[in-house]
Image (cartoon, rainbow, N blue to C red; front, side):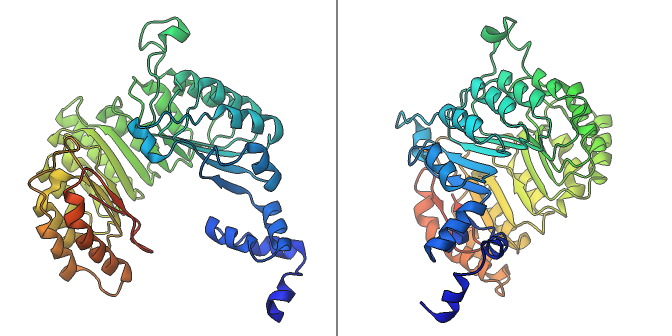
Amino acid sequence: MSKRLKIMTYFPAEVLERIFALLTSQRDRNSVCLVCKYWWKVEAGCRLRVSVKNCYALGPNRVLARFPRMRALSLKGKPHFAGLNMVNWGGFALPWIEFFAKNCPWLQELRLKRMVVSDQSLQIISLSFSEFESLSLIRCRGFSPVGLAAIASNCRFLKELVLLENEVEEDISHILGVGVGDGIGQWLSCFPESCSSLVSLNFACTKGVVNLEALEKLVARCPNLRSLRLNRRVPPNMLQRLLQQAPQLEDLGIGSFSNNADRRTYLRLQNAVSKCRSIRSLSGFSYFLPLYQAAIYPMCSNLISLNLSKGVGLPAYSLMEIICRCKKLQNLWVLDNIGDKGLGLVADTCTNLQELRVFRLGPHNEGNPALTGEETVLISPTSNYASMTQRRLIIQLLNLLTKALGQSFSHARGSDGCHSLAF
């Protein structure tokens, strides 16, 4: 061991804790643990955010014993391929939640991915963690609006509620004893009048009707709201009113552009959008009407992230009309109906692109004949070669092109800035 490293290993724990606090990457924190046993002990005692990649790799008791001061937990259940119904994997969140409810009541953040989360689990969360601030459920199943209502009612300091690609049990008539749809969407009205702490609200994956009045009141009393993603039941006229209440939004998920297609609503929406100058991320478009297309143009010049992977009703020409106005894009998700011409437009327009994902519009075994990849080479001469990120993006694109277009769906992670390439 070098003399300098030997000296550092005997730093007081308070000094090391301050140094370790500057390390935000989990990989860096893990590397620090390998220096020596003393550093391993100090780092474990001051780590606040813990990530468990497999809920069956170890038990919650071992996690808490290793990191007694943890405040945030990220937990993954089923592996990715289990989502294709290949394996009856399990991945139940209840045992973990019950353990931490008894032994770690100071937990503030919980992120669950590909797990079975019951309404009982959500009710325990809402009642057991007095300072709970953030709940993210990603590709989970097993819960209904009843569990969401418990979170809304009891988590007084809630800042983030993110529901992403979950299977929500919308039919709760067997639970509430009411008609189908009567109780759906009412969970938004369960937020108390004193709730003004929300920073992120995402319920795009829910399919039930929404209590629009409760949603508008909730958005109006949350001045720090930065991210709002809506489901397809929120019509354009309500979107316009929400944007008027929250011009500070930075991330917007548009649910549907298929209802109330009239000129007056369009003009009001366009006016509201023009006043939202902080929006940097746009997603959604579950259903689309060309009448409202121009309404989003005012925000396009500032966008750095655009996700149109759910825009099944978005024709290729409309997609290109939007992309040509997004010159600052760094992340772009689109469907394969973009075609070669669309890829050429991306090459000409998005010179700062770091992530490009193309999702199949049809069945897995049917590709889009309009997407051959020939126009992808146009990214090369128009890209900024002062950036290694762009150069690697081009190389990865060309290497993956032949293989990816002949398969159903594939992912390939690039290096550094090229976070993901998928066709």
